[in-house]
Length: 582
Image (cartoon, rainbow, N blue to C red; front, top):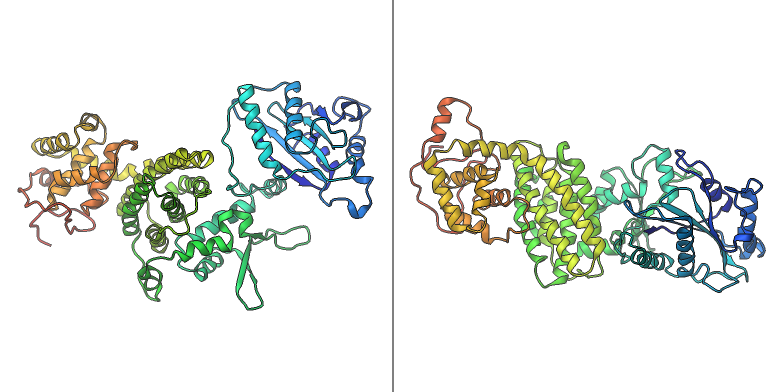
């Protein structure tokens, strides 16, 4: 059950909407289910003689009775209350009880108070009501409604438990401010899929992803086309900032500005400075931006980000809450960076993942003194590398990183759940679902090539790798060997061996790096870890002729295996057998 409190200035306009047909003729049988005094509240929905003007005058009477200078500019209190999808439909009597409990809990009209505010509850749909009140009591005073939103949420949680409805997650006042109903209506009229507030929030977060300095942050805001205005002190120091979308104007033709703090709690300038003060490694913050400095390739930036993301997942399994909270902020930046540079095939899912995980980056656990420079540097590298192609090494490296990011978001959901952060845990789980979808798309082509390579291996080679798998990973071996990913894993072990690695040792390293129990596909995780640890290409070239196919099936000479922890230098486009000519 979700309450959503807002205030306005026109009682008649709101009632006209509630009793009207709705924007898409979705309102059916609008009528009162409760009121401050039912006998004094005319119901234009059920009484042909009643009018909206009469109901407006009755509600506004305590406000109009005051001298004009004492009347509040925004005197209308509005609280829609909606049941969750899948809940049973409540009766009118039940909705009336919901309304009475909420006006009591929020201080609008406490039980037994005959001088309380006037209010009504209108129902025009099966799954929700609208509570409308005027913010002056009968005695001319204002109601005590401090933290009315929090108290309404708490009362809804009680009702859910008592009535057997879905129990929704409790808030902790760290969520970003939701768009108002007026903002949503304006966006619908303009044909936008989201409100300017939501668009600005996403673009500001993307501009902040991996930013090296405050100047870099403001430069990125301008580069993405936002209007930016700084609030300056007499000394010239920047005290704050606000942003606006080009073309988004009010009725007077003026830009509609949003301060960073109104977009999200962590986007105020002081909070941004706290994040930037942690800095990036000196080599990244200074040398990386020298004029003429060549940006890394997208594939390389993504490969380098994968082990950093794994370390963030490990931090979320530790006991240092401040460090874990800092890593969550970094993971959010990394997701923003990947989303804005992703190919078209995965851009939508990654954008949704970044938007969902944004909620998981904020809690009451402070992270100011913790160090997340490594993951912020990885995000910066991805942004500087630019847009990645959805094929070749770029596509494989993207799949490599996304496989890791799924594990990171699962670890984030567990971390939040263990600390009672229900909304953040749900947000992390939602982000993981979007990442899984993006991973499946990104991994389809490179994994197909690896499976084809693995199926063409000589049987003695495959059996040798089966033995290695059973020795190193006995718990998961049967499942892996029966799964569709075994051929890709066999191909990866074969490439590692050809590159001069000891496959047994490399496989052991991949397994001990971090537990595999949270992985959707143990095989996929091992494939990408092996390729990263062995510095192997993220793709496998398919044999194109019979001759090349026969050559690919020839068993390589026994390599002189490397010692644990070493990696081989490989051609970035294809594996090279030991001793082959360059």
